[in-house]
Length: 95
Image (cartoon, rainbow, N blue to C red; front, side, top):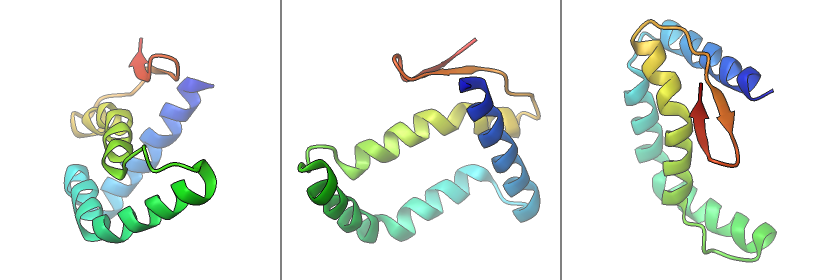
């Protein structure tokens, strides 16, 4: 299942890069910067409503998402296949 998740994200981002003809790093950075203040407010509201805490910062969430996506993005940019397994326990990609 974890390999399926990686392949799904890989294919979606690969198609996005092809469709937009833009650098994926730029897309992620632009999205994060354009929406940062708005998303921080949304994230804090979500945490208060659903998690009953604001101890998980938006910055931490972005960092975790980047950790998840960067190996996939790097494979796309290097024109390589992606065949790693995601370990939720270790929160990392493994062979």
